[in-house]
Image (cartoon, rainbow, N blue to C red; front, side, top):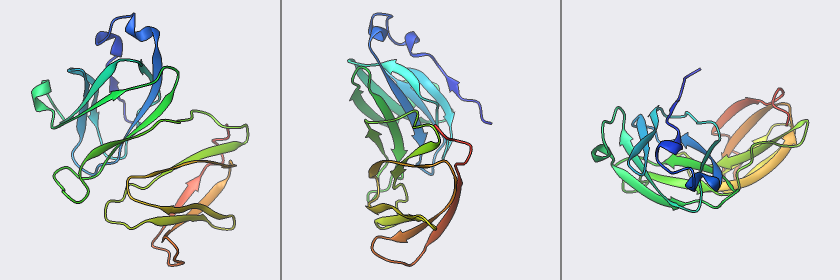
Length: 195
């Protein structure tokens, strides 16, 4: 398992600022490049590769966070190629998704933020949050074989809220929205992830 180099935010903020906090998970869904994430000019998450995710971590709320993205390895804030100002709400849980393609005008690099994140579900169930992160795909439906449609008409860069399903093994079929033509199938063994 890849080890993340998380640099604690108390290096950035005073203990007073940390009195109010939110929970945040970062997910890298932009195919290139591997990045470093800076917060208010200080390294926060380094060597962050495509399709990797951080754990949920405590971050300050109620203060402006300048989230900077730089190609890895970066040595200073001068390497940042995109900056996103955010202010998080105390006690809330967020999923931050790096998405799109750097330098592409049709599907530019962006940070998408889902502000109703969940870290746990009901015993025996798994809560699924859908995100459409394929820049060259139309809106899609997602169906679990033998179960039914889980996600309808989700467009690129959109989240679709949590759905609770039994902790089981699934085959998920992806189709263009409103079509029965399967363009991709994914195995999702959630049987050991109840709760």
